[in-house]
Image (cartoon, rainbow, N blue to C red; front, side, top):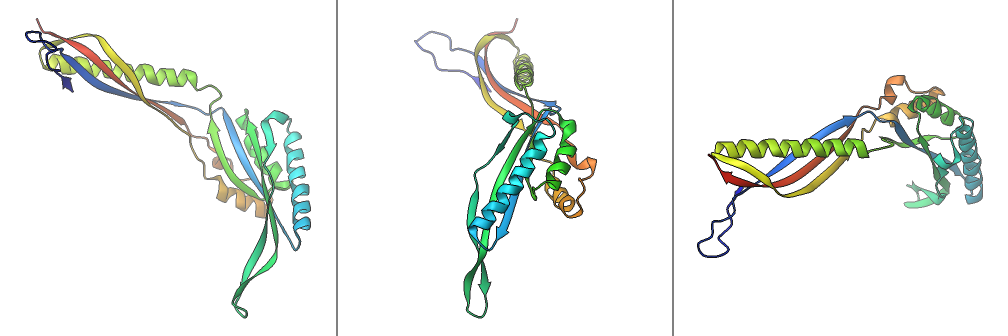
Amino acid sequence: MLALPGQAQSGEAPDRTVSVGGTATVTATPDQATVRFGIVSEAETAESARQQNAEAAKAAMNAVRDMNVPESKMRMESLRLQPQREYNPETETREQTGYQAAREVVVELSDLEQLPRLIATVVQRGANRLEGISYGLSDRTAKRNDALRQAVTSAHEKARLMATALDAQLGTVREISEQDFGYDRPQPGLQRAFAKSAESDAAPEPDAYAAGEIEISAQVQVVFDLATGQ
């Protein structure tokens, strides 16, 4: 848009500026993944549920260690223990039937080729849910800067086009600001594949691990001075 502020003092020419927005999106192939495995155990007593869960969680963590994943790249979330209740139509009340213990094992992988093996191994060794998997970049700075450069270039080209259409010349940059930065990660549909693999004791098909691409977007706002065309 063109901005023509009012004169600061009588007789002075108003500033002539053009304000434009520029956007750009770049893509990148993920090089790391964070996987969250759920371990859920049910038993008649709270202590039994806790003990079963602890054993399954320990087995899952040992399975990850066997893959030479560094200790700093794995962690076990705190235990959640709660009573289980079911509705009894005869008494029309919800009666306690036992206890459920649940926790998560979180693993960060820097080698995506290990992902299928990790899923299969942890399934076989104790985990019974895949709570989520997210792909990421170990270094987002370069791609973010690339998106910013392209967004600024886009704003400059738009400003030049608008100025030319108005028989004006584009002057120097008066203001520039980053308006937004986006980082969209692919979310693979592995939960269903994982559930089936847990039933059949086999890993999901390779296609289930397709990482896709990460989109990094940037948006800027730039104000240029305008000069009268020759």
